Length: 462
Ligand SMILES: Nc1ncnc2c1ncn2[C@@H]1O[C@H](COP(=O)(O)OP(=O)(O)OP(=O)(O)O)[C@@H](O)[C@H]1O
Ligand SMILES: [Mg+2]
Image (tube, rainbow, N blue to C red; front, side):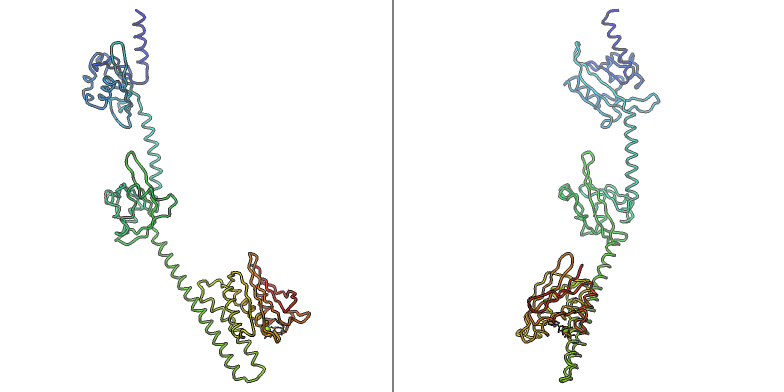
């Protein structure tokens, strides 16, 4: 046998040993090579086919994507890859057990000395496709487990807003079955006003930031009952189509509870304001009663005592007055309180008798400290006026606040305190009020030395 026929025989052996199909067609579509793999997969023998047109054996393929690809190779010299995923069941191939053999095809031109030929390679992808299907099923099962047990409604529409799919929670929340809803507009689930707010078209989604808060929508629940919904949306693509998937959280109950809570807070606010108003009125009434009683006392030594008592009650009334004017009830704007107190005390004594210079940082004090601190301040300023001797009272009131606490200082330029003055040992009511209430609010009272007049400093840590 010649070396040439040897090599032909060898290449035939190689082709038959291949684990994929190999076919070579001549320019006239006649079969020139049909390897053993092809014989097994088609049950058509090499002997039957050799030299015959492939369309004789497979007439059904004569007008198919497969025949187009062969024409492209033979006429235009173009190669094609036809994959199973895009072109399933191109050739009638089967596995040894009779099941269909899933395959990819590579069809390319060959330039042989006898003219143009077409090489067809067939690859078995059955196992790969099966594995992919299993993986996909496993992934889909995980996905389905999540969406079907989700408490939130999950719905998918196309970009026109036509419902494509919904989970069980959506069926329950909107009281509609998937079969009824799919194919209808998303408006089926939403109130008339909010139908247009479902994101349709890519622009609506593109303009939304990933961190944007949920869109608040009103939905239509069982029997048309309005539902408060919070919507988070995502856009995704499958092949050449775009879809919108929305997670709709039913917050109707939560919203109702929040509204009830807000109403309760509002009611409490009104109530507290009312109480503070009434307490202030009652205290003013008591203070007024004492003033009335004072008027009937003539020159009695009890008269100034009653006036002091009346003034102290007014000071507490002022705290409640500020509280009912404010929006806050747990703290008091002490700076505003102080300004008002100074103005009132100056007005009550007359400008010629008293001048107060106030320097105050902004300070909110706790409600528990407000009335005691108000009374302490009232006592200190009243003392500076009362014990001024013959000169007008020039009083400096300073309120300094820092993270560690605050300091209130009242100083004057009057005759000053007697040497060795000890507030703690003082038996008079004013000093007893000051020391006791300072202790009550956790503060300390100091009497700093001054070249002129008297100075009192109350320091309260935070
Ligand atoms: N700013 C001050 N300047 C000078 N002396 C003062 C000053 N503050 C207090 N004192 C002295 O300390 C004493 C005690 O003050 P305290 O306020 O306790 O009594 P009061 O003002 O005399 O009477 P009340 O008990 O009605 O307040 C005062 O009588 C006064 O002598
Ligand atoms: Mg006093």
